[in-house]
Length: 120
Ligand SMILES: CC(C)(COP(=O)(O)OP(=O)(O)OC[C@H]1O[C@@H](n2cnc3c(N)ncnc32)[C@H](O)[C@@H]1OP(=O)(O)O)[C@@H](O)C(=O)NCCC(=O)NCCS
Image (cartoon, rainbow, N blue to C red; front, side, top):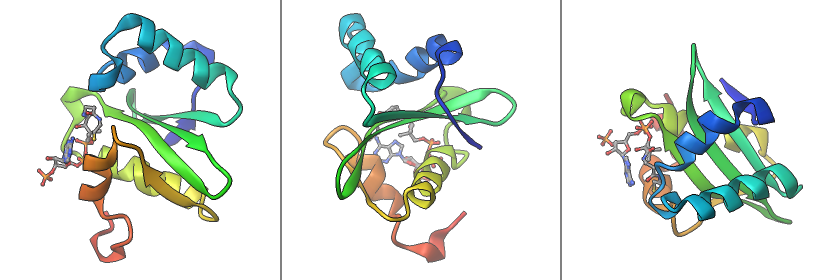
C-alpha cells in the first residue's frame, strides 16, 4: 500500500531516491529530500508491503500532478510495484491529470495508465 513519507523514513527514502540516475550526487539528493520535506506542493509517498520497497514523488500543480521520482528496491522489481504506485496515485488525485517529467517519462509511458484493460 501507498503511505505518506514522514521523517522517520528519511534514510530508506534517500536510499530509494538514489536509484534515480539524476540523484546520484549526494548534494542533489539532500536538496531533493529537503524539497519533499519543506515544500507544500512536493509530496512523497512510499510503497509498503512487509517492508518499504518503493517510492514515488510528485509535485502538485494547478491542473496536473507531475511525477518527478519513481523507484523500486532492486530486489522487488518486476513485481508490478512501480505500476501499482502510479495507478494508486492516479486514484488518489483522480481530479487531476498525472504526467511525467523527463526523468520518469520512459517508465510512465510504458505503464500506459489510460489502458484500464491492463489493470493489475
Ligand atoms: C522504473 C522502476 C521504478 C520500475 O519498477 P518495477 O516495480 O520494476 O516496475 P513494474 O514491475 O511495474 O514494471 C516492470 C516493467 O517496467 C519496465 N521498465 C523498468 N524500468 C523502465 C524504464 N526506465 N523505462 C521503461 N520501462 C522500464 C521493465 O522493463 C518491465 O517491463 P516488462 O514487464 O515488459 O519486462 C524501477 O525499475 C526502478 O526503480 N528503476 C530505477 C529508478 C529509475 O530509473 N526511475 C525512473 C524510471 S523512468
